[in-house]
Image (cartoon, rainbow over all chains, first blue to last red; front, side, top):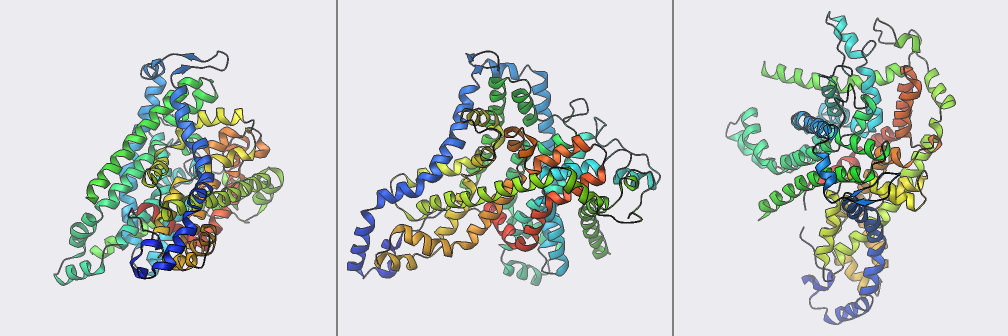
Length: 313
Length: 269
């Protein structure tokens, strides 16, 4: 994040001293005004709708506040309650489950896609488009599409399974499989995003390195494991962190595909916050839970920031 | 042999990604009776646009599309305004605390929207803005990642041009509008597309802030479709296609800018 100095200091014009002084004076007279005029619009909205909600959320999480009762300060009791609340614990567990199941496969498939799509051939370009297009769709379109593909009786997947003599699977109704189905839909939806990040990283690797590896007689596999993967270390770290964060925030697909079912086996954290807040109107408790989510994501982001800082020094 | 194996992997991957897309369209062109049958058919005996016509005429999807279009356009324009002026300050002005301010803005990227729904709901309730499109638009306007992309990009624009403009007596506003913005066009474009798509696809917040179905965005509307049209899969798929037309068009015309925008968020400055 190297910042550039304004023209004033640029070395190219060091000798035009008088013009410079003029420039400096007429700008300097307005610096304060310009600073306020240019930054106020963003900062006002930012403070009101991003910073304030965070602070307000921390505040609310210390209160017991149902729609009927008034606000009652309860200290940390909401947090204590959360960790003895079976529904919270299971929602948290399902979220972790989703993170654990989705992250590795989304990274590997995204990486494979990048390997295919960076090739400057027509196939590479076409493949890139096909892999990326689903990412453009909204979560509800993806959810409804996959709910249909995985529909028990008439969905494409079960029909194909039956066509080759296998039994249909209750993709969205079997408690052991429903979460996997959501992972599948998510994989189809967002792997293309990881592909773009990976291929952007791959394009930054200088051709000469590959060239010299080829001259040294390195095969494709060796090139991949000895050059591409090690040199993509930073990119991979970034993709992993972004993926973990995105997976922690999972909600839309679940809402559309299973509604948290069967028997609450796919209910995730965001959904439980939503239900607690807007179905049961326990605003303080819901805030406390969303602060737990906030904290988890903050820690992961901070870990990424710290590790990338170490790299830079 | 190895080459064949590799080609198979590539072909399978492409097929797996292509088939759901095709099935979406194929289903939407079938009659409901041909969809819900035991024997799989690739195409209806007579492909039909009936589902599309039905979706457009008997459901509020047209209204939802208009709502989404309004929300996404206004969000994009205002986001560009807010983010570019902020990025100009961070990239071009020198003052004490600039670095701290930049970090303060970037920190916003770490705050998940999902953890703010209760607070935002209460806030908009206080403003009496719930159930309006303004409520859907406002929380998305100050987009920290947009400031990040634009600041990085502006930092890369040489200062020689604006230097000349300043010497001619131009104000900062003039330099911003006639030097920085034109030169930063590609980054502005990337931010615009990210903002538009993000807004169009947003689900959780519109779901919470809008309760009147006439004011749904199309993303919320489609989720609602499933509830109201249960097993009319052909109709639902037609609705899903209609709801995705803007994204598909954007994708066809601006694929490069989208990819660039995503890559910009990934490549650290």
